[in-house]
Length: 134
Image (cartoon, rainbow, N blue to C red; front, side, top):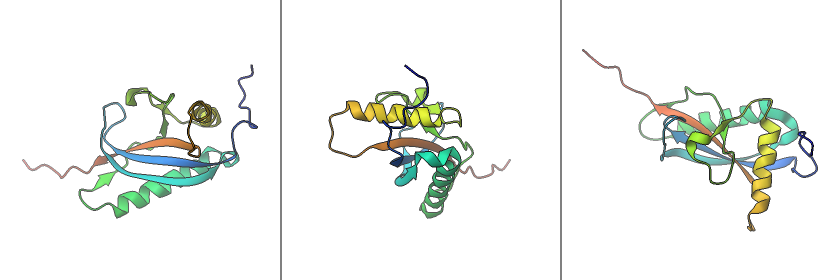
Protein backbone atom coordinates (compact mmCIF):
# COMPACT_ATOMS: atom_id res chain seq x y z
CA UNK A 1 0.00 0.00 0.00
CA UNK A 2 1.34 3.41 -0.91
CA UNK A 3 1.03 6.56 1.16
CA UNK A 4 0.42 8.64 -1.96
CA UNK A 5 -3.20 9.50 -2.70
CA UNK A 6 -4.81 7.32 -5.37
CA UNK A 7 -6.17 10.09 -7.59
CA UNK A 8 -8.32 7.65 -9.59
CA UNK A 9 -10.39 6.87 -6.52
CA UNK A 10 -10.96 10.49 -5.44
CA UNK A 11 -12.95 12.67 -7.84
CA UNK A 12 -11.12 15.85 -8.84
CA UNK A 13 -14.34 17.89 -8.83
CA UNK A 14 -16.13 17.82 -5.50
CA UNK A 15 -18.42 19.80 -3.23
CA UNK A 16 -17.31 21.21 0.10
CA UNK A 17 -19.75 21.59 2.98
CA UNK A 18 -18.37 24.51 4.99
CA UNK A 19 -19.64 24.96 8.53
CA UNK A 20 -18.78 28.29 10.16
CA UNK A 21 -18.90 27.47 13.87
CA UNK A 22 -19.07 29.93 16.76
CA UNK A 23 -16.53 29.27 19.47
CA UNK A 24 -13.11 27.72 19.76
CA UNK A 25 -11.87 24.51 18.19
CA UNK A 26 -10.52 23.32 21.55
CA UNK A 27 -13.92 23.64 23.21
CA UNK A 28 -17.28 22.10 22.44
CA UNK A 29 -19.16 24.36 20.04
CA UNK A 30 -22.76 23.48 19.32
CA UNK A 31 -23.71 26.70 17.54
CA UNK A 32 -22.91 27.50 13.97
CA UNK A 33 -23.16 30.79 12.14
CA UNK A 34 -23.95 29.23 8.77
CA UNK A 35 -23.46 26.20 6.55
CA UNK A 36 -22.39 26.85 2.93
CA UNK A 37 -21.61 24.57 0.01
CA UNK A 38 -19.22 25.33 -2.83
CA UNK A 39 -17.52 23.33 -5.56
CA UNK A 40 -13.77 22.86 -5.82
CA UNK A 41 -11.17 21.00 -7.84
CA UNK A 42 -8.75 18.89 -5.82
CA UNK A 43 -6.11 19.49 -8.50
CA UNK A 44 -6.20 23.26 -7.80
CA UNK A 45 -4.65 22.63 -4.39
CA UNK A 46 -5.02 24.04 -0.91
CA UNK A 47 -4.37 27.70 -1.76
CA UNK A 48 -7.38 27.92 -4.10
CA UNK A 49 -9.49 25.86 -1.69
CA UNK A 50 -8.52 28.17 1.20
CA UNK A 51 -9.37 31.26 -0.91
CA UNK A 52 -12.85 29.84 -1.54
CA UNK A 53 -13.33 29.06 2.16
CA UNK A 54 -12.15 32.57 3.11
CA UNK A 55 -14.51 34.16 0.58
CA UNK A 56 -17.52 32.14 1.82
CA UNK A 57 -16.64 32.88 5.46
CA UNK A 58 -16.19 36.62 4.83
CA UNK A 59 -19.58 36.79 3.06
CA UNK A 60 -21.24 34.88 5.91
CA UNK A 61 -19.76 37.29 8.48
CA UNK A 62 -20.87 40.32 6.43
CA UNK A 63 -24.43 39.02 5.94
CA UNK A 64 -24.99 37.75 9.49
CA UNK A 65 -27.66 39.73 11.34
CA UNK A 66 -27.08 39.99 15.06
CA UNK A 67 -23.95 40.12 17.16
CA UNK A 68 -20.74 40.74 15.23
CA UNK A 69 -18.23 37.91 14.88
CA UNK A 70 -14.60 37.83 13.81
CA UNK A 71 -12.43 35.03 12.44
CA UNK A 72 -9.23 35.07 14.50
CA UNK A 73 -8.35 31.41 13.84
CA UNK A 74 -7.55 31.24 10.10
CA UNK A 75 -7.14 27.45 10.13
CA UNK A 76 -9.37 25.01 8.26
CA UNK A 77 -10.39 21.77 9.95
CA UNK A 78 -11.76 18.38 8.91
CA UNK A 79 -13.00 15.40 10.90
CA UNK A 80 -10.66 12.39 10.77
CA UNK A 81 -13.64 10.02 10.84
CA UNK A 82 -17.41 10.05 10.51
CA UNK A 83 -18.05 10.01 14.26
CA UNK A 84 -15.07 12.04 15.46
CA UNK A 85 -15.51 14.57 18.24
CA UNK A 86 -14.75 18.25 17.77
CA UNK A 87 -11.60 17.88 19.88
CA UNK A 88 -10.31 15.40 17.28
CA UNK A 89 -10.60 17.76 14.31
CA UNK A 90 -7.48 17.87 12.14
CA UNK A 91 -6.06 21.14 10.81
CA UNK A 92 -5.68 21.12 7.02
CA UNK A 93 -2.15 21.87 5.82
CA UNK A 94 -0.44 21.76 2.41
CA UNK A 95 1.09 18.39 3.33
CA UNK A 96 -2.19 16.70 4.32
CA UNK A 97 -4.83 18.40 2.14
CA UNK A 98 -5.15 15.72 -0.56
CA UNK A 99 -4.89 12.82 1.89
CA UNK A 100 -7.59 14.35 4.14
CA UNK A 101 -9.96 14.79 1.20
CA UNK A 102 -9.17 11.21 0.13
CA UNK A 103 -9.95 9.91 3.63
CA UNK A 104 -13.19 11.87 3.67
CA UNK A 105 -14.09 10.30 0.32
CA UNK A 106 -13.25 6.80 1.59
CA UNK A 107 -15.53 7.37 4.60
CA UNK A 108 -18.27 8.53 2.22
CA UNK A 109 -17.92 5.34 0.14
CA UNK A 110 -18.50 3.23 3.27
CA UNK A 111 -21.93 4.82 3.79
CA UNK A 112 -25.00 3.51 2.04
CA UNK A 113 -26.41 6.76 0.72
CA UNK A 114 -27.81 8.20 -2.48
CA UNK A 115 -26.39 11.65 -1.67
CA UNK A 116 -23.37 12.91 -3.56
CA UNK A 117 -19.98 13.29 -1.87
CA UNK A 118 -19.50 16.42 0.24
CA UNK A 119 -16.18 17.16 1.90
CA UNK A 120 -16.97 18.60 5.35
CA UNK A 121 -14.80 21.55 6.40
CA UNK A 122 -14.98 23.67 9.55
CA UNK A 123 -13.82 27.18 10.45
CA UNK A 124 -14.27 28.98 13.75
CA UNK A 125 -15.35 32.53 14.54
CA UNK A 126 -15.74 34.38 17.83
CA UNK A 127 -18.13 37.04 19.03
CA UNK A 128 -16.66 40.52 19.04
CA UNK A 129 -16.44 41.45 22.70
CA UNK A 130 -17.33 45.08 23.49
CA UNK A 131 -14.57 46.98 25.29
CA UNK A 132 -14.93 46.82 29.06
CA UNK A 133 -15.10 50.03 31.03
CA UNK A 134 -13.47 50.31 34.39
